[in-house]
Structures are given as structure tokens and as C-alpha cells.
Length: 471
Image 1 (cartoon, helix red, strand yellow):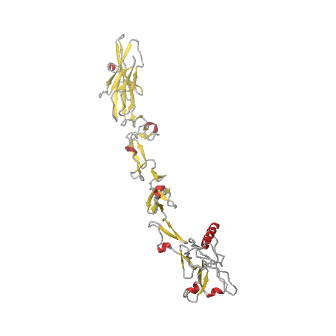
Image 2 (tube, one colour; image 1 turned 135 degrees about the vertical axis):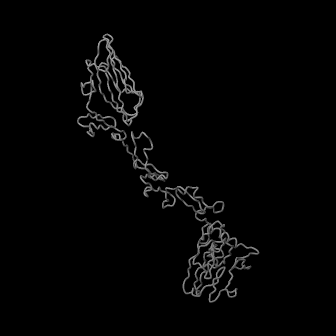
Image 3 (tube, one colour; image 1 turned 120 degrees about the horizontal axis):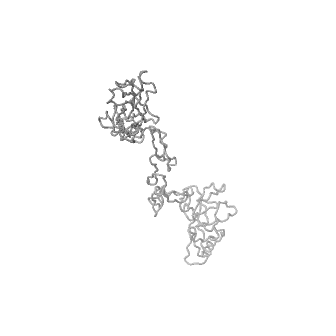
């Protein structure tokens, strides 16, 4: 390649070249010269060889041969009309061979192999550019026919020394061996980088040759960076039949009150509250969608707690069929109409609920002195034992004592009398009684006075209305 100027090397290289030049000037026997020079025995020096004269047809075509110190140039004839200063190519200098410059040319170029400066132009001779005399290129370049140095693509010509696992990358005047992305150099070989081992992915990672792939657990989606994951709000797609609560990576379904989750965790079905407990309602439970209701039998209404049954007092509400001559008596779950009292003979009525048999009447001699009519209600299946009625003497005589007993009506032996004092006793329910049922008991109080040799009795005719239900 042609060059319009010479590059000066560092002072160290210049000093080495000067020492080399002095050694070449010392007399020697069997001295050899570098290419382009001949040894002159007379002067004992290396002198320039004129190749333009000694070589047959050194230049082709119409190229002009111009002798140079240590070489020659083939130049187009057009170069004589204008200066020629091509740019120097990048090069790597070879080790300098021994040079014996012509003593007539002191301006020696130091540090360039086989290269010296041309002699100064003489008067009447054309002026040539200062060019390198030997046509060659530095390592990594090839000389073209036009004299230029072109880069050698070692990768394309397969003249590189990269191993099969590496990739050759051409550079200006050389090449480099590299690994593909996703590989690194270990032990002189390109080996795959396991990105998953170094936590390239936030959740799931699949390593591949020279690459990797990230994915996410269910309930997450991959972010645009293809590495991190973000939570999916599944509730936006309304996966639940009722309520939905988004969680990190998942979701939870909840149901309205009175419903429960099906096995799929999403569907809400009605909760049969009535099947949980027979005691949820006092009488009967009716299931409804999402709830339940308690109902009571006729004669009752649902209490404020929505579960208990409370008796309807038909006598107070007026919702009864009793006549004006009758007396309405209310009991649990119903009522009854009591006809006006009619005392059987020989009894006479002394009050609205009491009959008396006079002692002067011979027919009353063996009859109870008075009969008092009373009514009461009793819940079916009431727990026992239970005190249900109190009986007491209203008139007391000196020296008398009293005996209390059940005279009639206790056929099933559900009741008994327990005397609580000299003048009183209590009716006790000893066995449960199931209704609806009406029980009429004659409770007798016998008065005994041994002082006057008197024995008499009084009766309380107690009518017990037993309800159908235990409330």
C-alpha cells in the first residue's frame, strides 16, 4: 500500500534502530544485504540495487518504474502531474531486518522494515511523492491489485482459531472469539448459563440452551418484563355465585346468610337450617331460601324470638264463639265456653261457682256440705313431679282437724294430695298427662271434730284442660 508520509516511532525504537545501523556499517566478511541492496566489496557497504535496470519488465503496461533506495515503485504516469499522498493503513510493524542504507541518503526511515526515504530530487528531475518502497500489508490485511490493504475476514475464510462452541467476530485487522448470548466461557468452552439457578424468574423458570423462559403459578400473570408475576383479580370475572374475595394468587367465595358453599367452592346452595336441630323451633320449622321460619299450631302465635309459640287468648281478643250467657275460659292452645252454673238437687247456688247443701235438708245428710267449681289448664307432657293446685280450709273450728284426699277422677293415678299443714294441701302431678284431654277431679276436704262428734266434708270440683302441645 502507498503511503505519503512516515510515522516516527518512540525514542526507544529509534535508539534500537541507530544501534542496528552502526552495526551494519562495521566491516565484515561474507556480509549479506537485505532485499533491494547489493554488497559493494570495494566500499564494503550495502548499496542500492537499481531494479528498473536489472529486472526485465519490472512494471506492467504503461506503469513507470521508479527506482527507490532498497526497492522500486511502479507508478501511473499521471502521478507526475500532481502530488499523490494516500492515507496510511493501520498496520502492525514486523521486526526490523538489518538495513544498510546508501551513505548518500542520510534521511533513513527508522523502524519500518525494508523501507528508506527516497533521495532528494536533483535539478531537472521530476518530484515524486515520499512513498513506502516495498509493497506489503500488516498482519490481518491483504494487498489488493490497486495497491491498497484490505481487511481479511478471518471468520468468512475460516482462518480463525475459535473452537466449535465459540462465535467468530471479525474486527479490523483481526478477529475475536466470543460466546453467544446465554453462554459463557468456562474452561475454554462456551457453556450454557443456567439462568434459573440465579433467580432470573420470580416464580417458575425453565432453562433452555442459551436462554430461559419464565412462567407464573396459577392465579398470576407474567408482567411485560417477562420475568416478574402479578396477581390476577379473579373476582373481576365473577366466578362466585354470591360474594367473592380476592387473595394473593387465588380467591375465596362466600355465601349470603342462609346459604353454604357447594363442593366446587364457588356455588352457593340453600342451607337447610331445619335439618340442624329439632329444637330450632318450638313447634315446626319450615325451610325457606336462605332462611327458615317457625310456625305454631292453631291457638298459638310466633313469639318475638321468632321461634317460640305463645298461646292466643281468644277470650281477651274476642275471637271466640261464646254467648253472652256463657263464660269464656282460655287455656293453652284454645278456649272453652262455660255454661251458667246449675246446682243439682238438693244443692242450691250460693255464688256463681259454688253450690251448697243445707244441713236442715235431710237429703243432704250424707252429701258434702259445699261443692266449689274450679277450672285450670295444663300443658301436655308437663314434667313431673309438679305442684299444680293448692287447697285450704277457710273456716276453722276449735278442736277440729282436716283430711285432704282425691275422692274421684284419678283413674290413671296421675295425681296425689300432699298435706302441707293442718289446714292445707297441694295437688301434685306425679305422671305426665298427654292432651288434648279434660280431667275432672273431686278434691275432698274432710273436717273431723271429736269434741262435738262432727264429721263433714267439702268438695272442690277441679276441671283440668290438658293442651294438645307441650307449650
